[in-house]
Amino acid sequence: MITVTKTFLPPIEEYIAIMCSAWDNQWITNRGALVLELEEKLKRYLSLENIIITNNGTIPLQIAIKVLQLKGEIITTPFSYVATVSSCLLRK
Image (cartoon, rainbow, N blue to C red; front, side, top):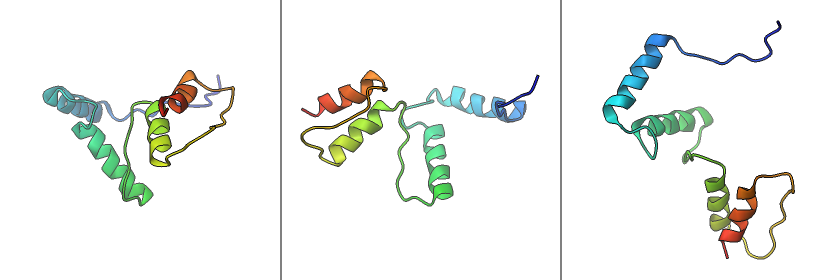
């Protein structure tokens, strides 16, 4: 068998330490410590001032539509998920 892709897994000890931290805090998502740490690392790596991690693709679409104050017709692809269209309709 030829492996085309392989999942990256950290050393088990490192993974267990991260999981224990999350377990002790009982807070994994929604602006939790791990999310904030990842945002800080991404800001440094990408040389950005601001970044926000979201849990799906719908939220960024809704944010972009609101921030850009898009009005009128928004053209999208028919090869997309329903969240694309629902995000456009939500602004009305």
